[in-house]
Length: 252
Image: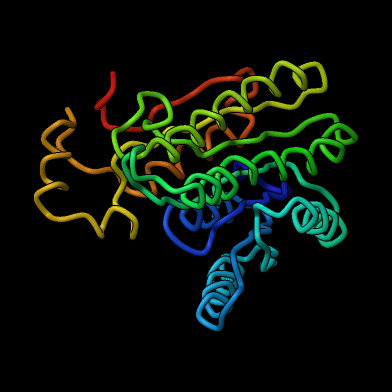
């Protein structure tokens, strides 16, 4: 039997990179998939539909929702729609996020607000909307996608690091509140992962990063997806409030 057979997973920001890898992995393990992404222009709409078709081809039900994850009301309406469309929400992965890097002395209010809203507020929005459903179901697994930067900080990324540290504390706090209801919350903190976001870095910076990693390679989105699968499934039924750094040993 597949690990997530009969379950429904809601994944935010799943049209590419880590989010898409998680959606595909969950679908391969039998989960029906609801996922969100921005649909503000034709390119984004096309990405939503292409991802939906790719997931559906794995033999599970899949719906895509064009939504701004940082908008509280849109998140509430999306979760309500997912519940109507699928009947349950067993797994929530808060993956939506952006970066707008800059040194603190030069950081604008817009850079700060947009990253905090896209990363941290979006996680609050979806946890807040999904908890009543999971409470009625007497169980659920919520995974926040943070970063090693949220654990250790990083120069030039104060806004991003603060948002990811907030996601860790958010998950741990709600894990204490919701444990008696059978709802688990955990956080994954990826290290240097090969995605479109890291592909834009200069080669010398990428190589320097790899030299600092004991395993001497960048991680792949599938490495994160495998960890998410473990946390979403009953294999981790006694694990809650934890932060798993998936970084090749970089920050041991």
